[in-house]
Length: 221
Image (cartoon, rainbow, N blue to C red; front, side, top):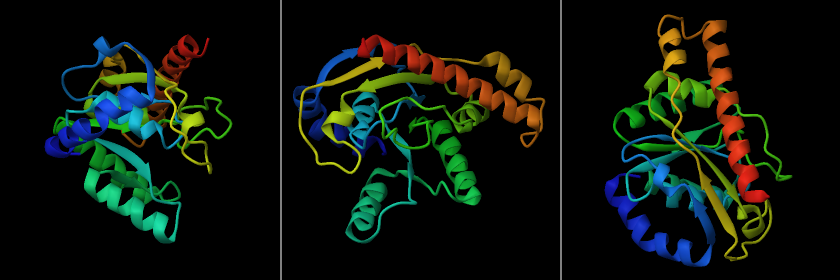
């Protein structure tokens, strides 16, 4: 979302989300003033509201799937994606993944906050899954700090394939920005298609996952 759309989103959705959905938010002071990669767990489509709440009113966007839905749901999704300048990704297409990564890198370099759910999809059982290496690649190509975050309660508001139930139960825990300068220096000397480079991406993703897992444990216990 550009600055105007993000500001409008904050005005329209910010306070209602805070009043009606968010029970507790920890670590608000950890949010950088500029662009960052927001990496969190993914339980529900309601995570979009929580993620947007963290990022607005600065310009932000999502990496989001286009390999599901047909008919009216697909039309509605496409309208939302167009309005919000959301980066589409077909998880079944390597070319789509490449184009989505290039677009995300471009937007981060232009000061956007890019939201990514590194699990690659919603955790239908509510259990945090292994983070995919794409988030590490996104960091290595930009050097933009990664802001880890954990959400709880969103699955109860909008379960996978379930109906929306408005409840003030969402907890958000935001960690300190993560920087992997040493890994980025090493990566700058590697071929981006090499096993060593992909290994660095996977290592970074694992460390982000560990931080999100820690943040999640703090709000679930």
